Image 1 (cartoon, rainbow, N blue to C red):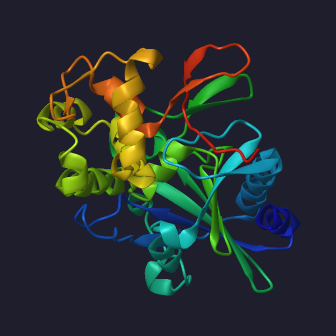
Image 2: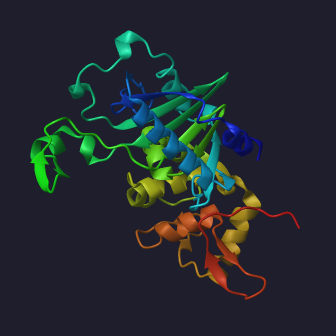
Length: 308
């Protein structure tokens, strides 16, 4: 895992640190997002806290898993994807230089921040650590609560603007790679849901896909704009088993053996109903598998081929 080794060898303690804040990206969903960030001058204490968070989160990662639409990491792993496959490039470009005109001068500029980016530079290497903000950065939250602190055995008001720095990181961008700890936040910040929606539209327009169904509309209604379902349909398009005539023939012949109850018409086209839509997606993903040891049949979240 060269990229993980390189990430772990990056000298966080010696790095120059800056903190960038970003509102929600602008632009239409069918185009790359437009990121506009501002940097905030920080004290030595804040820089130390940021570095500790980066080091703690980096230390969590013991292995990387190739990013897949349905892949999930665990507490000791990170999903790995190249930067060029995502909108990570425009994001890091927006934090390229701490120019004076991008500097935060008023607390209002920090309110309603959607996410922040910790930028660390050492020698010729740059490490970015990104985290989505919580409600403490929202104007509504600031207007609905007062901050107090406890000192000298009593509570007192603190009317200074308050913002929270989380102790977790959603994803790192380093060299040409992105290492993801929180997949949902990563996809939100870099607009992966929109990419999945675009994928589904393209899939519906493919004659090879549409023609395997009597009527595609019930499946479209089932998927809707649900993030998980859209991700699954992107994976269907990526795997493209529907283009494989042998796969589709075996599906027609053997679907009953695997507990599927959807039907085919006289021409061999799938009859989609609201009740069978989820089964059809599982079948087209090839996610119903049988164990050669227990002879049990399982639905799986992801399927990685193994060479034997």
